Image (tube, rainbow, N blue to C red):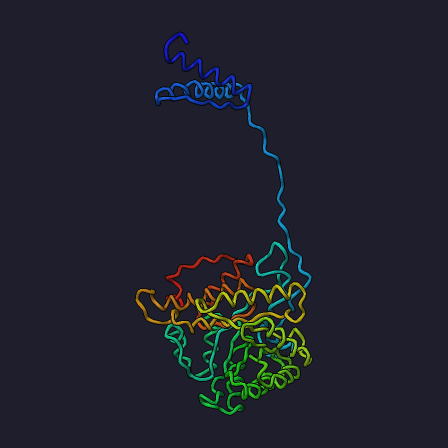
Amino acid sequence: MAGSKEDQVNELVRKVLDLVQKLGEIEIENVELTTEELRLMFQPVVQTAVRRAEAALKAEEKPPELIKATFTPYLEKFPGQIVEVQIGATKSEGGTRGKVVKIGGERTMPFYSFEAANPNKPAFAMDVFDMPISLTKPVKQMVEDVMHDPAEWAKKCVNKYGAQIVSLNLVSTDPLLEDRPVQQAMKSVENVLQAVDVPLIIGGSGNPQKDPLVLSAAAEVAHGEKVVLNSVTVDMDYKKVVKAAKEHGHTVVAFTPMDVNNQKRLNRLLLDEGLPKTQIIQDPTTAALGYGLEYAFSLEERIKLAGLLGDEDLQMPILAAASNAWGARESWMKVEEWGPREIRGPLWETVTCVALMMAGADLFMISHPATVRVAKKLADSLFGEGSCEQKIENWITSLK
């Protein structure tokens, strides 16, 4: 092949390109190329590509347009609906509360406002006890001055900390603690009813023998107030509590230990006793962050979905005791590398609360006022009623 080496390479490349264009592909055997020859070989190819690109730009050629398409998100339409439960009764309704709280009524999962408008936001109650008890330091420092008087304790939770509901726990009736007579414990119920005008949750001590007596008496003392009696289980005389709730117009909490089938069974037992769904709240047990929260989240989500899908035995609102988070040692132990427990503790309770709020819980029992404030702001924000900006360093200091 005549000419310089570079001309020879260019000629060879042109022939190769012609063959590729005609045949689509070619296979070359027994060819050796040095780096210099490789550079020379591809140089005209690059130059050709550059010239074509320049020509296209000069001709103002435009690439073809993408196919236009629209996206329509799938909207779930559930056949079922969660019943609405009212807590508290105003004077016109036969009670003495200044306002009532309604929970439940969902047509879709929490905060899925693009699918349906759920009528009620989550509600937040603060715990009050009828005797001084052992509390973790971050909680105790918020209520230490009123622990001797449940009425004053309730007033502080409502007036200073913004509790929508007071959860009065009559732990003094526990045979293993003070074993107070039922009628003596009822004085605390009367005092709290007079001290605050928000709705009440009235709980026993957890003793299956004494709680039916305590809750039945509380139902009578709070006649017409639409309080929540917390709680009944299958291993106690739940029929006695149901009878009192029906007679005096209250709601009953059905408590079961983390099992959908057990929750369904207890709900059915209460329904069979003639207690309507609008007077039942489910409590499938709340586990704290790091101590089974994933089980509690999954369980409550399954219950909520089952109710929305039409299971009539699970169409009641859900109660979550976010205050159980204080049972986790990480929330209260003084360990320097874990950070200040004054902030860590409320964070532990708040994360527990928010996670279960997303899973479908409607009513929360809370111990620390910072949790109440943050959770309420988040719920308002998700309902389009304000922002949720909050600096963590202001959580505690602004409450004192």
